[in-house]
Length: 122
Image 1 (tube, rainbow, N blue to C red):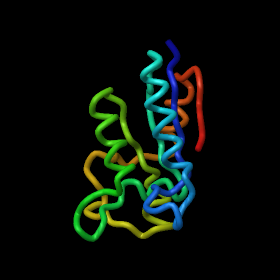
Image 2: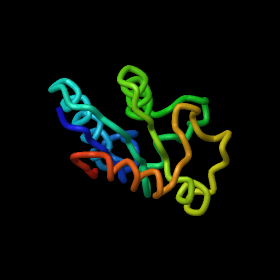
Image 3: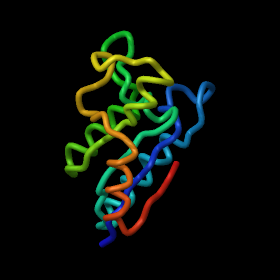
Image 4: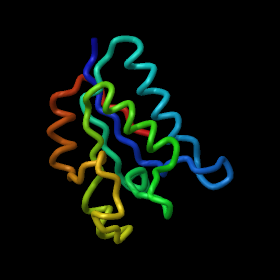
């Protein structure tokens, strides 16, 4: 059993025409790793990946962002979005973010990677 940290830098997949599928690939990787008995220690969303936490106009998440929430709740790992990127690059306010996603920073990411056996970036 391997402890894994996943770093997602890609925006959430909204439609195939508007963004890359790396976000979805990261989610499928996480599912496969868990199915094989590995542990996900932490998922860190950085750069455009922080948009996973952003609520849409109707108050919901994109499908892949909602899938991340369900997976994290089932397996007990945190979903952390970079607070600096959220504030400085996207000017998002806390009320615009889903409560399942925690604000954190590179310190939390560094601490998680120090404890992990593998770090995978998408």
